[in-house]
Image (cartoon, one colour):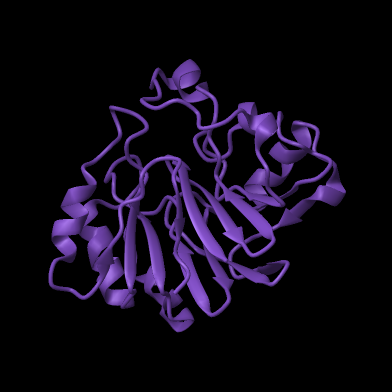
Length: 232
């Protein structure tokens, strides 16, 4: 069983058999409080109600590493993983060291029967993309990233599904570059992400779909907070 739920911005819940992985949950409005960008959609759930075995934060920007979300999650049951820049933040909000896992570029960790690989992302000094490998399916969560030829190194994983940012602002590739990456990796399914959260930093996902036309990459647009079965 492999299911995917978009929880806003770059955030996802992934059901992997009996395990649940959460990537970059943003359930507060902390970006508004600091930068004046108000969320366009409500948080799907309260942080205390998040049911996950592991949370991965891909970098330390607050719409991906959100202290106001993470400090209210279940620190006793959940494992927390991310690159070096996130380590001190985890400790600062009261997460114990035995619940924290370093996940820097080229590192691999396991969650049940799932292998999780951190890969390069061109955004912050140590930001990561994440490849989730489960039951012969490889999903590539690009994370926040500019387009960079180094991203093509993941081709060795034979990516089935790409989840790629399209907003084209604040250190991220645009929808044309996202489509180029999707096509050059030869993925089966392309899912746009990192839009629809802030009016000042969004994009129309249909533009990404148009760029994929005729490429053989199947476009899949996820409805917010709806679960999709993506297992072949």
